[in-house]
Length: 312
Image (tube, rainbow, N blue to C red; front, side, top):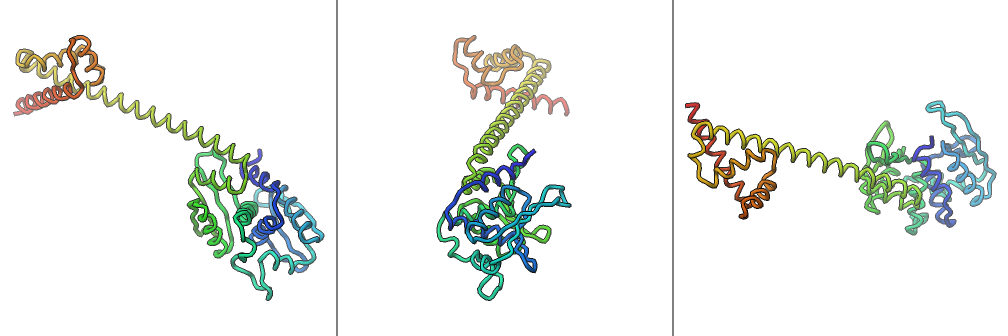
């Protein structure tokens, strides 16, 4: 079964872009996923569509011969695709802001590749294609992450994400730097940012369903808790009334208090609001919830004094 990450990468890899956008995306991919052999530049990926996209970009932009080999990944048995370039290697690395004129590694991509918002978004697309992953929203937690080897690049990506208010964070994990987003809404915003529209629709549908389900569960739990609280309160009131009747009798109570006692015993499971409505209807005189509450406090206090007197 294809993972959600793969679906997102497949969608993003199929998107067209201008030459400048394609160079920004390719720069991110090469800067974060390149190995240099004696005679070749090698980019690896587990996604066949990403491999094809990189192959086409290198071929079209730099007019070089590119090959794709595949082999089994010994770690997870997925196919691993190796995109290899054998000529213009130095030119490509300099043009994509990976090395400078003296062949030294450039810690942060040069500004000229990210002049516009579209180019910045294209760079983030490349970052996701090269080292990003996102949990399927059907799973128990929301999580999007990028595993980046170099600290300067990780800081740059983290800052770039936060230019779009995505609340990304960064930590060192397994000798690499993990830049991650955990908020469901912000992950949806990132998918919009990289124009993964099909993924956004799927993601938001599942997220809204989960949020609705969680809200329903919370409301059900709250309702159940309120029912239990009402039942406990009713039982306590009935115990107090029975104690009063047993110890001092009904005649010791004033008419209004006695009336409340009898209605509570007659309707033992009714909430205070329900009891107020019943009494108002049957007596023909408005009995407010606050008025009932006041009388039950008097009953509770009287029962407390009787218990204390009995203990003495």
